[in-house]
Image 1 (spheres, rainbow, N blue to C red):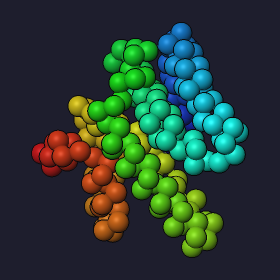
Image 2 (cartoon, rainbow, N blue to C red; image 1 turned 135 degrees about the horizontal axis):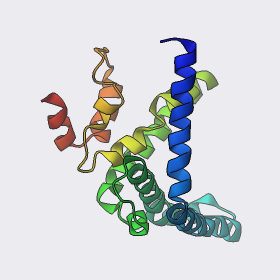
Image 3 (cartoon, one colour; image 1 turned 45 degrees about the horizontal axis):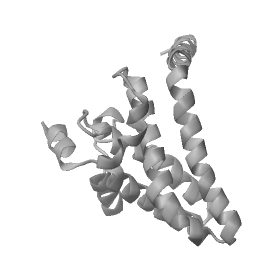
Length: 178
């Protein structure tokens, strides 16, 4: 593929993404404002008690499910499957997977950062969309085949296999094999 074709394809991709964003702005605006308003509570708790530990339960049980719901709204908008404002609160069935993936991503990034800064950045960039993959497999096609990770015959380490096992539920794993 020539450079001019790649540039044209990238520009058309950006144009489609911008069109999706602007056409869904009446839905996205309340979603973003609700997410920001609920996140502001954690800053209040941190300021009030001068500790992150005081805000941790609020962030775990309120902010994280809403952020997961916002990711679900973004995925539905991208797929054109009729996203609604109530989808912001509809991510509770995949909440446990989102928490597991977030914790594993944080631990991988921390471990890579302890080795040196660059491995932490590389590990984060390698798995930064794993939360979207964990959410998007809810009744949808296999997210790993969409990212082409499984289609290439990579030799994967045990840590990566465990991480993918957490990300992709059993139904999606069985549909990937067929």
